Image (cartoon, rainbow, N blue to C red; front, side, top):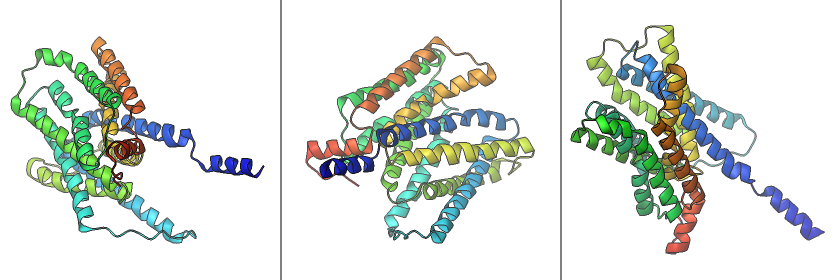
Length: 336
């Protein structure tokens, strides 16, 4: 009886499959949907303000939101009667990496936006969607992560599905080599961002990481607004509602859940899932703006879903599985 009771207690202490696998994946899907409406909100904002003004207001509002979030958390911790966990000491390198991740992300966003003026949307989306390739290479080199063939095939299948989405544009586009390199550079910068965030996720809280990133975004876009624009802020209530939606829904909810998901998933898998972003955006545009959904859209959607399924069931999607493969096959200690 004693042995049976001990087994029952141990089973109760073990986290369920729902909390360990399903819930983190659902949160990642919610993040995907929150980020997918970014293009629609920006499209509405362009009727009143430029993209520079939109980015500036989105960034500083989100920075304030994350600062308040962090402040409330600190206040609750101080008022709580629970024992306070000693805060770890951060090194200068940690702050340098946090700043580097913020700069890489914002520069990648600006570079991709500029690439749209130099090459086709299809090329920009496909080349910009190659980030998982670079995170796979970086994870293998830096974190000793290994990915099995099933995961790698799923990644390539999802990238192929993203390429299928832009096949129509490939047939009619006049490609610019400079724009293609810019989109590819964006993919490298995004991969760098997520690899750094994957490393920093165990050191900094979600709100701290994103507060820094939004502050850097506001600082980078402020000179652009000062030089090229006639306004700093929205001029109507609808304009304020749009930028607040971008800050709260897209930045706080979307990017917040994305950074949180790096606790459970590798950065490569997160970026593979985000290859669905143009599909979700196309469906929302079909609902809101009556834009057409082609047969290739459905094919691309199906191929990406298949690739995500293969990657998720392979070895390398979950943080623990990729670390365990590395330890077993290379006989090294998993990187923290």
